[in-house]
Length: 486
Image 1 (cartoon, rainbow, N blue to C red):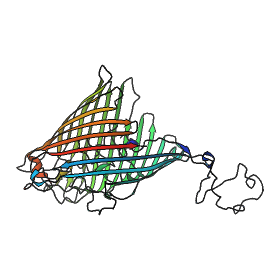
Image 2: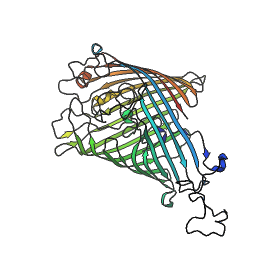
Image 3: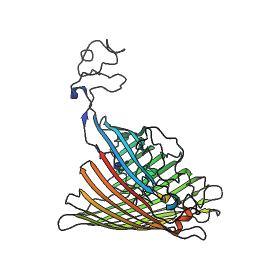
Image 4: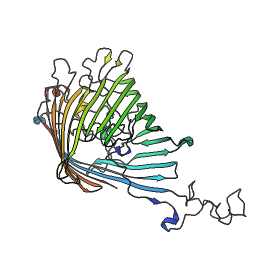
């Protein structure tokens, strides 16, 4: 499975500055040695070390490394702000308004320090909250047991977002690398898209990384990656992935990926069909994906099957997938145009009382093609059900200049419930979104966007407020985003 480090929230890892962290580079006086006067115990008072020759080692206070040792420090950061207006998210009922006008602020600042050719460290401090809220709010919900959009998940407090070590040429094997600590995870098939299965940005939490370790062994065009993570809900993920990336042939490219995963103590999301699902003991997910770039056409597809034990009497038996194509071309005046079509399917379970749970468990999916139904940041009404959603999406985009600095994109999606409750409709609703993007500079972007979701009668049965109050009035979202990477 492909791992793109830039899948960190809003693509944090834009590296823009490199400096050597030595006293000689900045002209400052180096810090005093650990032993400011006299030789260190056990060392000779004569010879090159005593006279400050090439064998001398000057250590900074509390440091195990020489202050003049060659290190490269890259400062990286992010400021991401939103002004939002939304309504009818929880009930689709204009007579029972849940209108909200609010803003969001995410800020991250970190450093990537390359100690030598084998060791690199990354640490990032982050903050995420609603605008105007300077006090940490109480933690009232734990995910994935979350039915209310835009609830705080660690918001309002400074957090360690990243803290991990990259070990290259591990065990003196040039093909082997190991990462350990708190790191961004985004096992996505297509670059720039959220992951179908596992994405640490799920739930739009303050911390967008997971604690764990992974190793990658490269053999020519094949990457083999075992991994283990402790997830934010205290469940555990173990797995292994294999990626095959043959050499590009002209304008064509092929990417094949697959993985086997085991989740322990899976927290199941409460939904209308099963409000008290509890935890699953073991969930096995078998995944395969493929992408083929054939000139201007991109064809892709993913499939995952799930098995395992929910409890003593119920077994997991869900599946899901997506398939689509995208056509990119340039008009006569150089403007880029994109057209796409995609279908998604996640199985559902319409009988919680039998011995099989047929719902596809996608707690950590990063899919965010639409704002209101799918985006973890702006809506995620798809979490009103567990799996149990299929759709077809049509998308289009066009640039207004040859450099693609100003772009307009649109998407339409029609959603159904493949396994509705008894005597319920299968229609979930339809959504249309429009986004105008302006690249103010190479690292600063404005986005003006909006979406409208028209619920269908099936939405009434799964809305968290209940079928008595829920209705089919449109839900809407308007927003302005400013994002700066540095």
